[in-house]
Image 1 (cartoon, each protein chain N blue to C red):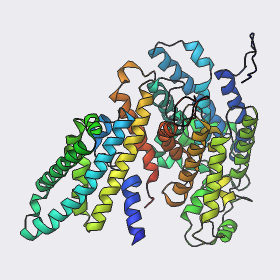
Image 2: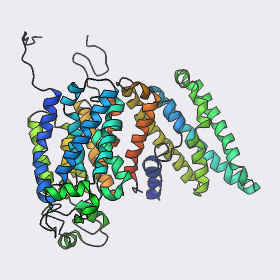
Image 3: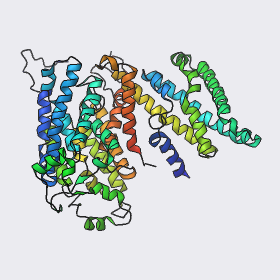
Image 4: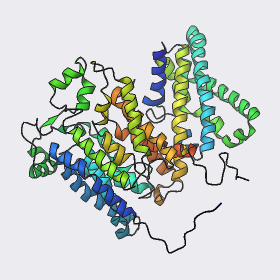
Length: 192
Length: 345
């Protein structure tokens, strides 16, 4: 029981990391990683949204879509659920931390289009996770996303001052770094 | 507060980049001798051919970037990269494998990031990981060690032949001790030891002496103050502790004794020649402790539970990635300041 959930977590965080192994959620990974502080804010917001959206979409699918025979509507209804959760998060952040809201700015609504969020919701259904498993899988995915986002942001602050050749400056070297990182994460293959 | 004041002229420290690089090259000698004794001239050919490729790549990159050729080639950092990669590659690797690895290391691992001093990832390990993932078969065939090699240790000529005309010669290969341990399902460690001649006294025949050689070279580098003890010691200690924790005395599911892990694979080579890279590791001493310890943990975890038999390259790359973050949280307090950053009043 406990072992199952820790395997699920390790699998989602390291072995099948959503960003570096499954290549989901690359837009915020590249877009919000220029500064460590924003990356931390973004990862916290994403963790909150992802875990909540994972649970909500599970409930929607199993208690609304499935009984009504509307399973084929799952993608579009998950998008709706995620949009609602993001809107809710934005309201919470705006009230609780105006500074964070200003820093995250445009990126917060962008969580709606973070493919990792929809990806987790759909994968939960595909793999027939139960409610608790969905919750853990969503949290693990978010933790893995946050881990690499924060590490990547710290690295990009250093890359910003490196003597990178002109054609490779900015996002280009960021992409190459992400690729090398993806190579390194392949070392975790087989852990679970 | 009385501070000792020394007026100029000051004596110059002789520690230039080129001198450091030459010292590192020299320090690989004991390990290299052991590798050559047990596995033949393959590693030497790797290094020589890799060195040629490295210098060509470095010169091309410098020319493209319009940097002074002589100044940067003189610091021998490209040769160090080629040497480290050449040692890590299996002996008798084909010529194209070495070209791909070294070119990737120098061009993408180093010069795309701005060259010497800016590369966030250890170039040699970047090259190694790219090769390991792209050519797993070539990268996991190790020569049989001397003593149990039925055809005898290949000489220099055979090594050259194996490198440049790979199809013309067969080098006897064998599973490495780490491979054997990973694939072992049912044998007690003691039986595994007896049935496979690849195992030596403590770890693998040949491997244990290569590791001891690299340990000796590393200690000499420590004595020469090329790097501080923090990262390598932290790595070895964390690995030993984990190995001791999970060692069950030698059942078939055993992960191997601490001594086995310390002296097999690339442990010592990694600890003293890869982890200590001043550019890609954490900067402060406290940061290096964290950095080294995390590498030790990752190596053990991947060795024992992952798919790959050894994991120095993967672990080092992962921690290279994390090093700026580690630095961020282990910034030393500057002299005259308190921990919270306010100047002392």
